[in-house]
Length: 322
Image 1 (cartoon, one colour):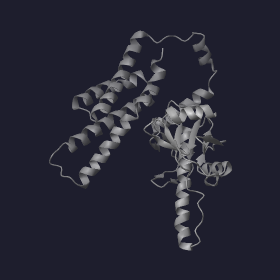
Image 2 (cartoon, one colour):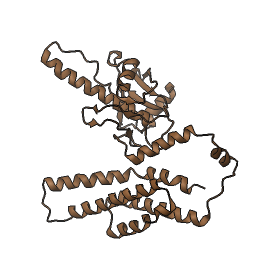
Image 3 (cartoon, rainbow, N blue to C red):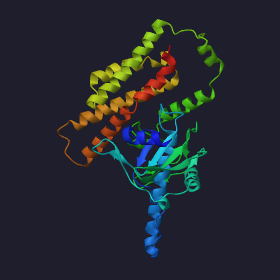
Image 4 (cartoon, rainbow, N blue to C red):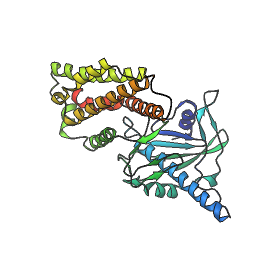
């Protein structure tokens, strides 16, 4: 990333699955206290800060669906919030705060499988202040945690694949469906240039019969309509649930088992959303732990649906693309 591109990014770009801003570096190089008791809490806090850095690097390497093959950037010294002028405040970073490239890569790869081959750290001067950008080149791998990872806010489980929402606001463990799609993106890249790719380029692939296309695209549209309605209303009606059940019942005859299994889970989630929403609207349920737990479950289901648009597009693509 050259300096012009960096300044443009600071002014106009938002965080994404491949870009994150940090106003200061992770507190991994603070001076060790002299007092023995203070050292214990210092070391614990330091390890959690390393965990936070590891989490950010691995999730930027993985990105999310639709970001395959793009580099990741972690910009240190830049606020993640825009100011009143629509740009971002810049903070001068002391070079003593920054860990070395070797330290970061070794720490990341002690938690990462397969290993991330390389990162690069560059220093820039923006508005007279020193900032740093950690560049994570495209790896064409899906990186899992080789052991549990603790950060200041949460713990991620062993074998988890850390990915990021497209707006960069949340890092989470990929679902089985998301991991399948991420793996497929990588397999497709490796298999590029196969006979089927050549046939497509030469126009020798038989087109999908229009009546088959119509039935498949209709199911895709129904699923996306359901997602849009949940995104707007945060709930699903009993009628919509019944219609969804009728639609996905035929999926096994038009798609392979992976799509059928996905749509079964989709319906189960929709049914859970209907049930939790109905219970929450029951005025007989008092305010308390049970209602709070139910509201949390309901919110998690809605968030799951909000992350499914790209997954649905990708799953249906190979069966519908002309």
